[in-house]
Picture 1: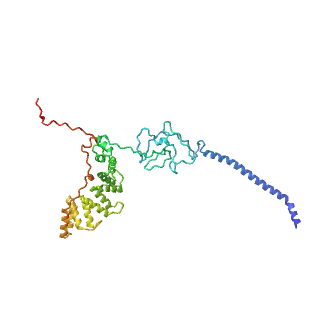
Picture 2: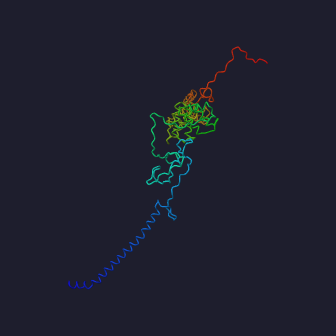
Picture 3: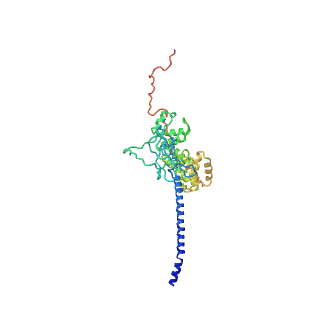
Length: 400
C-alpha cells in the first residue's frame, strides 16, 4: 500500500512543483504591484500635507484652510471704556486698541488667557506707550486683567478719589464753593436748580448727583426727594428698596411726606406681599402731622379693619380731619359713616375731631434755609458796614 502511494507521488511530483512555483510567482507579482502603488501615493499625500501646512506660502488653488500673514498693527482706535470706569480726559491717554496686540476673535476659552501655540504679539507702533493692557471690553462687567506687578501703596495711604464734578460758573461763586466744600444746603440748592432749570440747563443726572451728596450728609429733604426718584425710576434705576431706606431716614427725622410715601410702599408690598401693619403705623404718624392723604388712608384701614382693629368712630375722625383740608371724597365718606354711628359715639367722634391738633414737623426735616446773605456771595466774605453820618449833622441838600 505504501509503495503504491509513493509511486503515485513520484509520478506527480513534477506537476506539483510546477504548480507551487506558479503560485509563488503570482504572490510575488502581487506584492511588487502593491509596493509600487504605495510608493506613488505617498508623495501625493506628502505634497497635500505641505499645502495645508501653516508655514507654507498661500496657495492659489481653492484650498479652504489657507492662512494669510498677520496684518500690520492698525492705527489707534477711539477709546471704548466700561460703563463703570471713570472717563479720563487727559491728553496722554493711550487707547487700549493701540496698546493691545492684534489678535483674531476666539470662539471659546477665557478672555485674556494665552492659547497654546499662540504667536507672540506684534511690537507696538512707534511712539505708542510701552504698557501692556488687557483686551478692551465694553459693558459694565470687566474681565479679570492679566496680573501686573504693582508696588503696594504705603501703609495708611487713602485711595485716590474720583474726579469731582464742578458746578458751572453760572450758579455763582458762593454756591459753587459751598457745594464743593460739602455744604449739604448748597448741594441741595444745586439739585433744585438742575431739576427746575433755574440759572442752568435742566439736567436730571446732575440733580441726582447733588441730591445723593446732600442725602449722604443726612439732609432730610434731599433724602425724601431722592427716595421719590428711586420709587418712580426718574433719573435713576427704579429701586423700591433704596426708596424705602431713604424714606425711612427722612421719616425718622420727622418728614411727614416721607412717612406717607413709606406707608404707601408697605401697603403696596415692597417685596410682593402688602404689609398693612407697618403701613398703618406710618399712616398714623403722618396723619398726626396733618398729612391729609395719610388721614384719608388711615380712615379706610379703620373702616375695613385692615392692619388695625376695625373702628368706625376712628374712621369717622380721620375722614373728617381730611375733609377739613378740602378732600371731597373724605367728606362724602364721613357723612356716610355718620349715619351708621349712634348719637353718643358720633358726638364723641366729633369732639375728637374738634380737639385734634396736628404735630408740627421739625423745620430741618422739611426745609433748607439759605445763608443770610444768600448764595451769590462766597462763604466767609464780609463787607465793611456803611459809614453812618454823625448824629446831628445836616441831611438836607444845600442849594447851589
